[in-house]
Image 1 (spheres, each protein chain N blue to C red):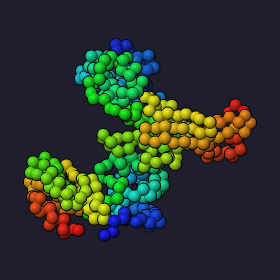
Image 2: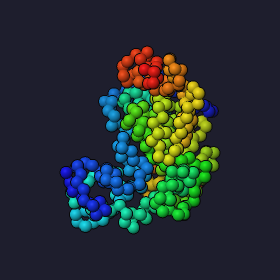
Image 3: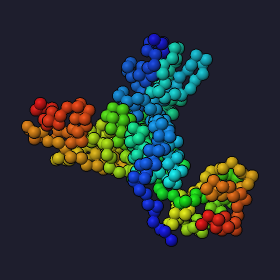
Image 4: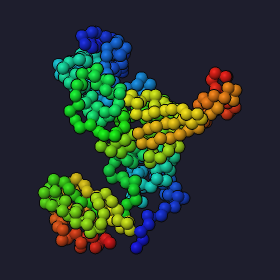
Length: 241
Length: 161
């Protein structure tokens, strides 16, 4: 266990925990977009910046989602420096994705009044945090999408910008996406997955008893493969089982 | 003139890739080296080759594609037999590197980043090749041609065409 202070309050934390873990566990607000408890932290959105003072009295800004707690660490989450850096980051994000409702709300909350930078036109809502790719890889295990290219050409895409062969249409990417850049809709017997660079449609499997479409066929195939059970085990929806 | 893209045989690619993968003992961490070797063989990274690498190294295709698109040295588009790199670093730039590039672009009728239709040349600009005293520099297949002028472009290109 190590002792640290956040905003003047003293906490004990297990070694290996991050500043964000401790703050969130104690109801101290730190804005985040690319963080999700189920996947490894990545430090992409830069909104969780906090100011730390180490033992030698040196102050610096770090991403709280990646910074492991240390003995005697003094963390401040709302110094003028932190506030101004977060506002700046927020302005960049808003300039990139002016259409995102989530970003606008968060911008208001952080006190961003005006975006000084030229705003992207007809852009998607993707902030390139890679959360969808990380969830797809770490949680689902399908690895259907990833960040491709570099620098200004960086994009979220499937390999070769083609329909993915490994996507199981589970919709986890749409669920975790912090800005709503990925959409997942079920229309009749198809699931439509709309991503910034590609829209894919998948057939849904029908429950044998009630006739409801309950999961994409590819996801059922995935269940069968993962569990080692027969396909017959998955003919019914969870409600009819 | 042969104007078609170099034809690739999928079976041949498979054999080639597997030989390369074996050389690197199919280690996941050797991905960049493997891609380098493939590019040395085909001048670019053909899609079937990347798919075979993904299968061979047992890593998702998304990761192979991410890495292949991240580095500037890798090309996913077919490239010509000879690669022309015009240096536009600070020293070459002030000595007229851009004019040399423009001349090559006009002579070959392609833009920087493109390949001639007969797949003889690909042209790209780079940001310093470490021989600033000899600028402007034009590299063809890694061979340095120093103190380039627009007059010399023709004679340099003739050696390869």
